[in-house]
Length: 85
Image 1: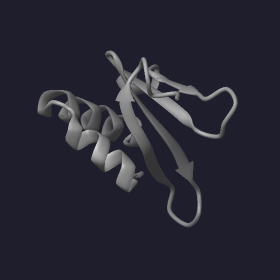
Image 2: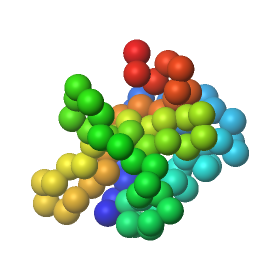
Image 3: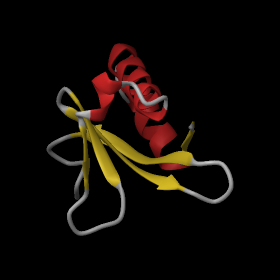
Image 4: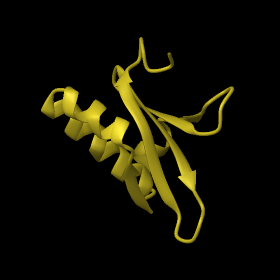
């Protein structure tokens, strides 16, 4: 599955420390490739469509687009205290 980032998600990643941003990108790619180590960190959002993946104190909010080839679209990335605002 391909991973795509919205403008907001790309901007959010650029604001983070490089090591944190690279770990987030690695976890997202691992989930997209179906690796088991990333699958247990993903939960569906409660009141919205989509999912969140936990990477330490950071979260990434994404959806799975099924039009044509499946694509994982990352909408936002941030610290857990303000990601759900």
